[in-house]
Length: 407
Image (tube, rainbow, N blue to C red):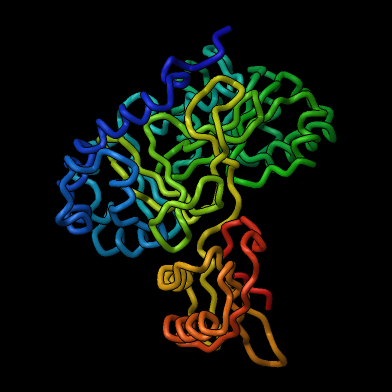
């Protein structure tokens, strides 16, 4: 049995980087034909963006901005040149954010993730993601069919009818949330229905803690996780090595300091930013608001693309203090103004009946002068007073959190 989907997965990382960044300038030219990208990337020479350093100089587009942009310039916020009728399907996600599905094969890039989870051509897959208006169901449906699988478009719920389909068609694979997989298995056990044909699963859309992983495994199902979004499709996925998630091909992933577009140090937790090389609907530095960290070296499974730890929380840690919003971007600004500081964390707590802020800052150069300067910058940037506490380098946790609301 072939171990990898294709040769792209095992090529040298340097060759992958060279190929992606050779294609990027033309993708930028295509993107800049759309009015929103033309405005955001004004003055950018696409021919000069041929490295990660150059890409990091472009502005990020935050997913949190998309609802307002799509509302102002329906349906796609001015980021797509193609007419809606040129796409295969048209969806919406809460916001609303409007997402088109391309007509190309495997438009959501999910066949690789299913293959890595053990799915093969001619497998029958029970797909329980929703098919109603949002793209989730169609992401996994199209991906499975691109791999050559037959799909039962079950959607979530209605377990009794699903049992009939499972017993009739004997699907070997499941795609859906891990929560619904447990619901299905529990209901089958209670009703004495036979769902034993399901041997493997690709799950996404909800947490899959170790306890639930162990329970699913004990029931005879080999389940793997995938990370994706309605905008980009499948972004990263687990393999049999179980050593993190492999970033999908045709994507450039960056991990940046929350609230900025600046890459983090290797291994540090930061926000996921993705550039896709999809000519039908390119995304240039889309900041997802999700946290992760890169893992060193290639996977033991032989795939050579970037490895990440998986989803590690949300990067948007904006909170309100004394009626005013404090944002990660402001903490990043304090860092820029004081190069002697390392990792920062603003802790928000209650003292009596009053909000109180303490900026904890790593530094090896602590003195009264720096303390006074940083306290002044904290007030100037946030328009709020707060304490400053210096700690030794490495004392703050590497979890991507720059604002900790402990109230």
